[in-house]
Image (cartoon, rainbow, N blue to C red; front, side, top):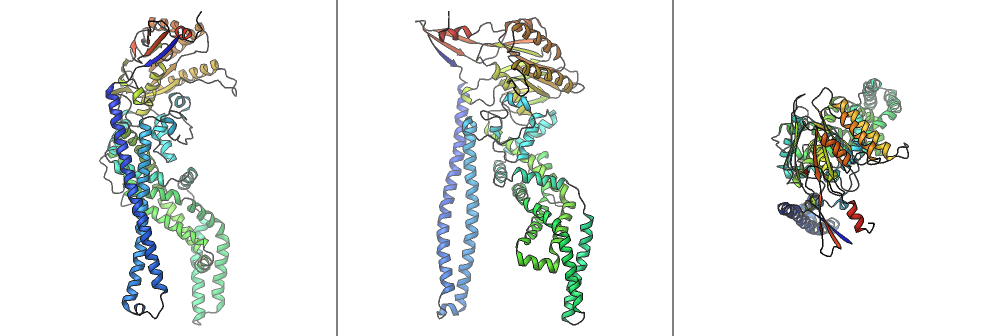
Length: 631
């Protein structure tokens, strides 16, 4: 006996939209590739011209002096013009190379967008995330992972702090006003595609390491005042004055030599006393240069951009305001860091140190900058990180044009609430595999039991529901024509794993997670307008039907407080209990069978449509017949 498994195809309009979107991103990629190739050709020609110019310049400089050309005014003018042309060609080549790098990035970005659009998971890079929050919920719903994951759809984000914002927003229920603010900011950014892409490029191109970013935040967050160094600064001024007055006085025979020598000795003593501290601070500022350069490049992109959105203006204002301009502040610390690098220039540094006590003055300048600007620059850094997160969400919105922005309904305590979903689907599925469903779910029947046989779509629907709720917290559009839900936290028991390290069997691991969820949901929703969405896939599948039913009853009794819960099951005893329970709504996924006339071939068709009622059929016996295990 043979069997064919057929799956419902999405409507043709969806496939047409996919084709249109693919063509759009292919067009963007081809355009970027063409411009990059044009710039590459221009760069090659300029290199050739620059080589010719250099040869001409060398020829003019080493030409014999008896040539009349070299003795006249016009000869000198020609040398200067050729030298100026050579310098301009170097500058021009650098500018062309910068533009080429940008269009190379755009080409790669659009290519990645195509892969994200078509959900080519194996071809997409897995973001390097250190997951400290989210836990089992993120794992269950596919927020992160090596295969299909939500994180891969946001691969345009590069900064670790922007990723941390992304994770925090996903993990934390936000009120409806916060959601609206993020949505409006994302909508505004999608209208400024050129600025959006340049900002993402700046963040990608000048991307410091996580260690460098952490060191900057730690340094800006510290509040230390070195009174001893402040005192030595004033003493150093006196020591430098004493040295120079002594030397000048000796030259003009006003003062004896010992005065200058005393100043030099005092400078040496101060150098020895301060060398350790100054060198430590100089190394720190030198290590922070990549982070500062990254901040400067991102601010340069948005400094002249006019945002109509209030939230984007509030993020932009600390970066470009006239009174406390972040660009000028970053320029000052970059200049001080460059002056501190003089210590690498041997004799020059030694001379500056002996005559000016260079390290003390630069140290004082850096510490003064730290006291004056640290809070502002730290706030600016946080604004840039949030901007990058919002830019990542805006890129996601541009790449998923069929998605729509959900509405989170304000829910005063003790009032009725509902979840209204129209054509909701799983955001990680490609267009040609995604089947959408409708659901109107009120808290009059807050428990949903979904029955169905294997492979019918129960787990996918549950994950789609949970993942879209998380996605909405970013201010992103979700995979639905229309979606409305209250402020909710999401709890899941979908992918349970046993633990040899903890000595937990599959049964005990799932039981512990169930208990943690029931206790946690009561604690989190108590005293506030916050619902809990609980998703239980094949609850207690690792035990017998009787124990499963008793545990199911206990969980249901516990989850009656401000909770929407979805249970999927094959167990008809659970379905019978839910049918008799007034707070349950019953839905099913089912399949149909067609047998060939020769009765030797079955076609099993899955439509993945959510339907009311209890699924009474199973497909295990049919599959056994196909595999030759029937009796």
